[in-house]
View 1 (cartoon, rainbow, N blue to C red):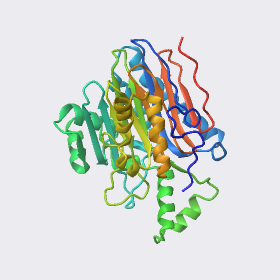
View 2: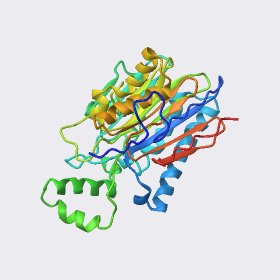
View 3: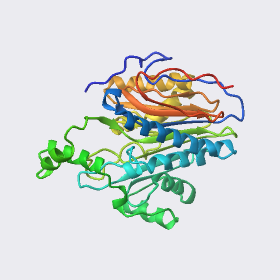
Length: 352
């Protein structure tokens, strides 16, 4: 497996691919950071029209969350609203754009966490809930549990009045083609013809389209959320890191809020999201130092990964060890900043 990470190393401060951006912000300031997946994201493979679609949708998501923070809303509300935008877009592997399982279904996972008290909720393998991130929040706030799965999670979310859709709502042609390509590679009968007909001339790509958001509100509270469709061609009700608290999502006002994207099995085994917080708490590292060290550790074991992390002072990091990561941030000034490629590493101007 080829992993590009020329700048992310095991040093305590890393500048370069997915550079971290530390900004000391005073009390009452707000920050929202998002990701839309990491992987083989190259400008050469992206038409100007598609690139514009990604930049516009990421900016829309940032503005949606910022609007809540700007009027004094909570970080939890901002995270949920931000992820709604990405869950409703076919561009990302979450909600409407979710990938297909081996059996041709969409099975969605999500989690959310409150930095004030470590309250958390998650769902795995849901199939009829339009916004899995809202189902995760309902588990956190309206049940005694943290993680619900499958039919039980669907029934719980439905009972809470969340929007239910027919499973066909999640179907997209692009994701269906991706499944057919995987099936063809496995030698599944009937898959090759469809690929030859539908994907001729389309550039190959490899990315993890999980979406996530971390936010800091005026009250100084952190929150994090993550939502995904999992991996194309997954089998046997596989569950990745996104609904696993401490693996794909973490939030604690004393350290940081984290959302990850990448090869979920590595995130689970290395407890990635919590590891960032642990390095801050026990080793005294800054959020950018801790995030860079964790991503460097995953590179050493060939785990493709990216994450966003934000501390209670408004410092944030967006490291990754792949060729790109859909990512962005917005501060109190309301100006969205979006980056896609590895080479986009210019640090933002300091807030006025």
